Every structure is written in C-alpha cells, then in structure tokens.
Image (cartoon, rainbow, N blue to C red):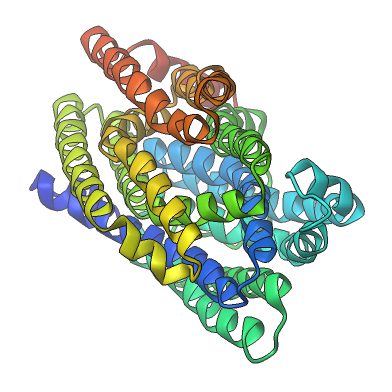
Length: 459
C-alpha cells in the first residue's frame, strides 16, 4: 500500500505520484473547457459569461471538501509514515462523513439563496437567468461534488494512487459526454453544462465508495467497516481542521479574488467577461498540471516527514520545483506563439478572438512561477504547518491581488486588470522562495512535529 512512498528512485517516485495527479487535473480541465466549448457553440456571449461567473462558486463548494480532503490527506500521510494505520483509518472515515453532511448543508443553503448568490457572483440583467440556471444544478450536486473532490486527496494519501485518478477521469469523462448531449441535442444551454458537471461527480463518488468497500473486504486497515471507525475524537478533528481550513482557504480566497476580478472586468461588458473566461480556461492548462504535480507530491512529502526522512524530502522539493518551472515555461512559449489560434477554437467573432489572444499572452507570463508557488504551498500543507501555507494564500489572493486589481485598473483599465495575476505571482515567487529557504535552514523535524504528536497523545 505504501510502496509508492518508499520507492528508492526519487525521480521515479515523483513521477508515480505526480503523473496520475496531473492526469486527473488535466481531465478536470478538459471537462471545464468542454463546458465552455459546447456553450460557446450557442454563440451567446451572455451564456459564456454566466459559466465564467459561476466558476468561483463551484470552486467554493470544492473548497469545503478540501477542509476534510486535503486536511485528512496531510494527517493520514504523516500517520502512515509513523506506522499508525488504525488511527489513519479512523481519520479517513471521519473525513468521509464530514463531507457528506457538509454537502447536504451546502445544497440546502445554496438553493434557498440562489438569486442572491448569483448577484454576488457578478451576474447582471443580461446573464442573470443563465447564471441561476447553472447554479441550481451545481447546488443540487453539491454533496457529490464534495465527496468526489475529497476522496481524490484521501485516496492518494492512502496509497491508492491509481484509484484516485480513475475516479477523477471517470467523472470528468461522463461530464464531457453529457455536456454534448445536454447542450446541443437537448438545447439546455448553461443549465445542461451544470447538470453534466453534477452527474459526473455522482458517478465518480459511486466509484470511490465501491473502492472503499472493496478495500475493506480485502482487510485493508485504512478502510474498516466498523461503526466505531466513523466516530472522531477531539485530537483527530483538531488535526484535520487545522490543516484543512488553510487548504480550503486557498480555493475560497482564489474564488473571492476571481469574483472581484470578474466584477471589474464586467465593467467593460459581457464580451470582455467572455474573452477573459476563454483566456483563463486556456491558461488553466499549465495551472492545473502544476496543481496536479504539487498535490501528487504532497502525500510523499508528508510520508517522508512522518518517517523523518529529511534529506529525501528536500530532494523531492528540489526536483519538483525544477520540473514545475520547466513545464510552466514551455506553456508560456506555446501561448505566446499560438494564442490566437487557440482562442479561435472557442470563439467565432474576430474581435473577441483578438481580445482573448491578447489576454492569454498576459496571463501566461505567470506559468513558470507556479512551479515554485504551488510546491512551497503544498510543502507547508504536507508538514502540517498551517500558518505558513495560509500566509501564502492570503498574500496571493487577498493582500496582494485585490489591491493590484484596483490599482492597475485605475492606471491602465481593462489591460491592467488582466495584468494583476502575473504581477502578483512574480512578487509571490520571491516571497515563497524566501519562506522555503528560511524553513529548511531552521530544520523540519522539530517543533511542529512534536506539536502534532502531542495532539494525538491527548486523544
């Protein structure tokens, strides 16, 4: 079960945990782009704008799952490194039930406050109906959205790398097929895109539960079917929540930042929102691949930390950052050279194609920096150092980004708003490099690990 974490060839270990996670993120990106592509065939900018405006709300729902998915994954990986399988299994089951209950609560609140949430997302009279249609089906699927996204992280930490990726690919594949059926033959538009998304997550959730039962039947200690395994204790809850909330805030604050950004872009009309939405979706290719790489190595780092393999952990970080910077640089080159051709895949109006290509050339400048920012953030999450990962998150999506959007908008208008992302992430790369260097100089097996063990001892 943990052989992937004990692989002696470190580049091979990174590939074994990183490539499946990158594949999973790539399929997620493909389904997101499929939503946009099939909706774009309606040739209705207001509908494309609605899908763009709803993206931050979907990310917020996913972020709630991250409280228990990413938080539980960090705790489980470290427990396995310490050889505490039984407690790791109880942690996994607590996280599962917590995601179910959170999903039901989110669905109820979202459906009750649907128009208000659509307005908060930036919808106006031109696209309000489309936005509400999309959000209605997203909130109906909220419990499954949370389960699917949480299980991706939990299964990776449990060593079920292949199953984690299969579930993600399955859900995204179903989503893409249903996108075509619901949007084109049935003509459901934005509502069809949302319904396809939710049903895709239903399918992946069913698959993950089947895997859970199969592992339990094989006697895997991480997947007991005992009632007592579902009951948390105070130490378990504190351990998961203390890491999960900062992890979730990454997505929440990113969504808040996107809502602020969308509202500023909306000043310039639905065409500007649609052009940015397409450019952002294309730019998500390197972003999602690098997110996958960082998420994939997080359990490996956590396992090394729990097993006190300091040098192996440092080598993992160095190699992962190099891989990330190179990958980001390759995509920056591609987007600078072929931005217009890529925009033309999704758009048919010449003016929108040109504007989208211009936006893409600005956005893609930050891709190489993500190889540092994402890896350092995941490093602190894996070690259970919530304050440091939270610091990076707040700087990235609030303290630096929102003022940058406001300032650059006042200086250069729409072009300044788009430029906020690469400007902020260039600054943040320097900050992350300094934080990581300070952390590694101070050692990584001291105070925080002792604190983590004290929490478990109290339970």
